[in-house]
Length: 204
Image (tube, rainbow, N blue to C red; front, top):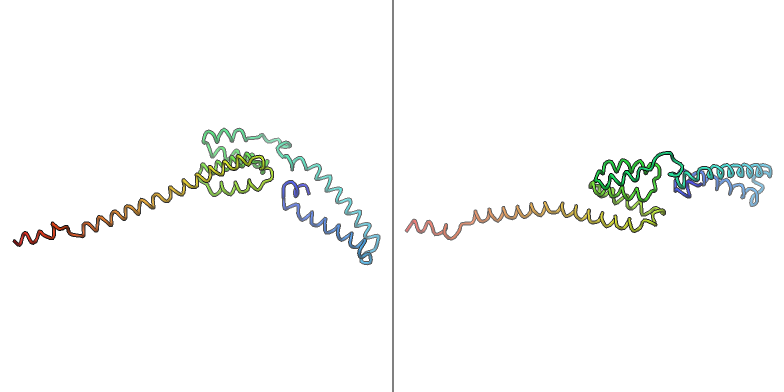
């Protein structure tokens, strides 16, 4: 249950649904329709449910530190500082590798996700950066980073505008060149007044 509440992991959802169904079945057969099952079976099912619930509670308590703060229980070093330095040095491939190592430990780390979005932006993967920003906004732990998220969104919007402008400039240039060539061809094909009077002068 802790994985479901704290991490939103759907892998814990079937267990939660199964426990809820079993509990409701015991309550229904014990109090609403007692004729469906003998009292001994209801009591046995009840105590089995209590034992199973106690087991899951103990396991959740033991796993809670690794779920809530996985970085505090891991032996792997925190590579975020190295990733930040690589990012400032424009070594984006190294920064991305280090950030992936950071996110392998804590997948919901807003600073690492924001820095990875910046890496995507600088390497031209603007759509990936936009998708990553949307994922960051959906995290409840990202509320404290809303200023940084908004700033990165502005930088990403400016980069996307610049990219769109650079894509439209060659098309505009080619259209202008085509128009100039057409006008030049028209001027060549259309005789000037001097050309029209030249045969008359020769005939005279």
